[in-house]
Amino acid sequence: MMNASERNATTKLRRVGKKLLKKSSVHKLLPLLQKLESLLSSLEQEPTEPIQESLVPSKKALISDKLLRHTDEDVKLSVLSCITEITRITAPDAPYDDEQMKEIFKLIAASFEKLSHISGHEKALDILDNVDKVKLCMVMLDLECNDLAIEMFKHFLRFIRSNHPRNAIHSMESIMTLILQESDDISPDLLRPLLDSVWNENKALSPMSWILGEKVIRNCAVKLKPYLMKAVESSGRALNEYADIVTDICQNKSESVNVIFQMVLNF
Amino acid sequence: MLGDYEVALSNYRLISTEYKIDKAWKRYAGVQMQSKISAFFKSTTSDSSSVSADNDDDLSIWEKQQHHIINTYTRRPPNPNAVIPSVVKNKKRSYAQFHLDFGQSDFLLRACSTCGINFTPGDPDDEKSHNHFHKSYTQGIQFRGWTKENVIPLPTLEAGRIILVSEIDLTSHRRIVEQVVSMMEIELGCGWILHDLFKVYLFVSLHRVVGCLVAEPIEKAFKVVSGSPDSVKKREVRTRSTTLRFGNVIFQREVEKKVASLSDSERMEGAIFCDSKPTTAACGIRAIWVAPSNRRKGIASKLLDAVRKSFCKDLELERSQLAFSQPTSAGKALATSYTGTGSFLAY
Image (cartoon, rainbow over all chains, first blue to last red; front, side, top):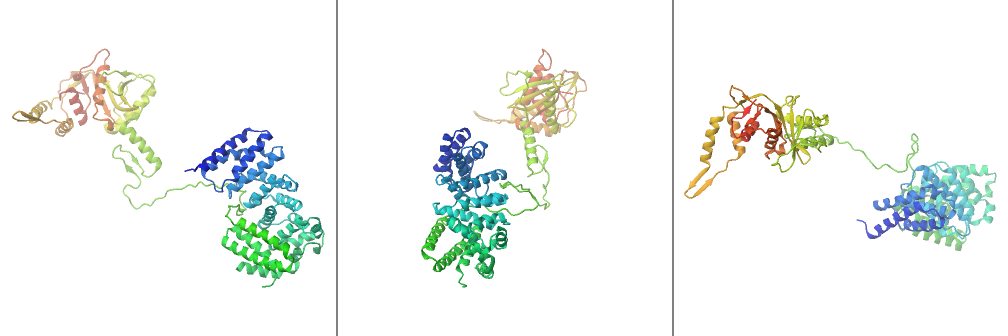
C-alpha cells in the first residue's frame, strides 16, 4: 500500500495541479509553479500508479496554451522547468505526443538564451541539467528537430561564461557530444558554430567557448572526421586557422586514430 | 603505447559515451578508468596546474554521476515505411486461446442435464448464454411487472402474486406469456399449449415467473374411473400398516406424498380410463408448469385455487369441477392430490 510520504505527495500534486488550471495572474502562478517544481524534483523515476495519476492534472495544465504560451518570461521558464522535471520522471517514455514534444523543444532551445543573462538564469540551468541527465535530446533527434539542435549549439557556444557552474558547462558538453554522436547525418550548419568557436581568433575573444568547442570536437573526433574537412573548406578559412585538434582530425593522425580505435574496441 | 595520450583520451571519452548510452556499466567503468589514466599521463605534456584542476572537476562530476543509474531516453529504431510512430508505447496485447483436439468426448458441445441446452465449455459467450438460460429455466423468467396487472387475490398466498392474462390483453403481455410457454414446452411438448381462447395464470415471485397455468373453457369432460377401487383399497391398507401398537405405546409411520405419487405412477404407467358418459364441465386445465427449483412448494395448488376463483364470473368453482387435459404422471398425481380423489375429470 501507499506509505505516508507517497500519500502526501499525491495529495499535494493533485491540489497544485487543479489550482494551476484555475489561476492566471503572474503573482499567483509563480509561487504555484515553484511549489510544483519542488514537488516534482522530489519524485523518483518509474513512479507508482497513484503518483502517475496525481501527475495528470499538472501535465494537462502545463501543456495548455494558457501556461505554455504565457506572456511573462518568468512564468514560461518555470513552466518549462516543470515540464523537463516531468520528462525526467517519465523517462524513457515521453510524457506528451510528438507535436507537443516539438513545441516543448522549441521553448527549451529558446530558454538557453537566458544563459547569457548575468542574473536570473537559474531556471535555464535547471532545464539544462534535466535535459542532459535523461538524454532528452534523443527524442529531439527522433523528431528531426535539426534546426533546434543548431540553435542550441549557437546558444551554448555563444553564451557560455566562466561564472556558470562547472556542472552546467559539463551538461553543455554532454548535450552537444550526444547530438553529434547520435545524429544520423551531421549537416554543415551544425558544424559551423563549433568551427567558429575553435577559430584561433576566438581563443582570445571567448576562451570558455573555445575550450568547450575543442572538448566537443575531441569527444566526437571519429564521428566528425568524414564531415569536418568539408565544413572547414566551406567556412572560407584555412585549416591552420583552427585549433590543433581540427588539423589533427583532418590530416596527420588518421592512421593512429584508427589503430587506437581498434585497440579500444578490442578492450 | 604510441604515446599519443590526447587522442587516446579522446577515443576513451567517445567509447565511454557509447557504453553509457548502451548502459553497459562495467565497460563504462573500465573506460572511465582508462580515461583517467590517459588524462593523468597527458598532464605531463602541458601545464600541470590548470590541467590538474580540470581533472579534479571531471573526477568529481564522474563520481557524482555514477552515484545511481538514471533512466534515459534512447533513439527509436528506424522504420522507413511507417510514419513517425507515437512515442507512447501501446502496452495492451490481445491473446487468442488455442486448444488441441485429442478426441475428448465433450470437446465441442456439452448438453446440460438440467436445462437441456447445448453449449461449448470454455467459450465465454456460450458459457454466458448457457448461464442465462439455465437460470431462466430453473428459477423462472425474469419479470419486473406490468403497470396494469390483473392480480387474483388469494387470502392464503403469503409471498408472490398470481396474474391473469387473457386474450384481450396487450401484445407486450403476450410476449412474456410466449416466453414462459416456450419454457414449458421443454417438458410438456411443443405447439399445443396456446391457442386463441385461453386464460394464462402467472405465479410471480421475487421478480421471476416461477409457475404458469393455461386454462380454457370447455363444455364436457369425463370422469376417471379405473383407479378408484384400487386407490380406496390401497388407502385402507396404508392406514392400517402405518400404526404399530405395543400396549399404551403407539408408533405412527408417516407416509410421504412423493412416495405415494411414485407408487401411483408405477402402477398406472400414465394411462387413464374414463367413463364413456360425458359430464357437463366449464373449466379445463390445459397445461400447468412450475420452474424446477420452485417445485413442491404448493405453487401449482395456488394456481388452481386462483383458477377456481376467477375463471367464471361471479362464481367460484368447486375442486371437483376442474377438468384436466391428458395428464402426465406428475399431472395425474397433482390432480388426484388436489381434488382428493382419483376420480377427477379429464378432457
